[in-house]
Image (cartoon, rainbow, N blue to C red; front, side):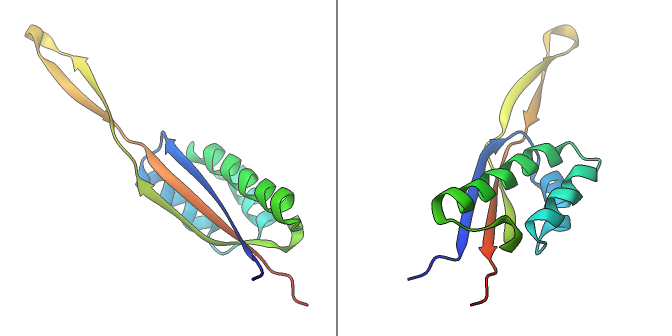
Length: 116
């Protein structure tokens, strides 16, 4: 059995799923180098977390399976909803308003494109 896929998962990232998906849609199906370039120049806060996760997936591919960077492309990326951190904002007359800080789990699957 030959392994051609490598996976990396970032859990409990402090991003909302919709804001993460806005970036993930831009890099889905691209090569590793192309995705890194796109993430470098997109103006969203979630790009740094996703870029680190992409580096982790690439490091897994190089170290564990001996794949080369130039042959790696993104097969699939997706974000699932994580738990919400619950906080309270003090308000007037002793009240408190709830604040929900969303988290998400992002998974990146890289594929080796060598043709032999």
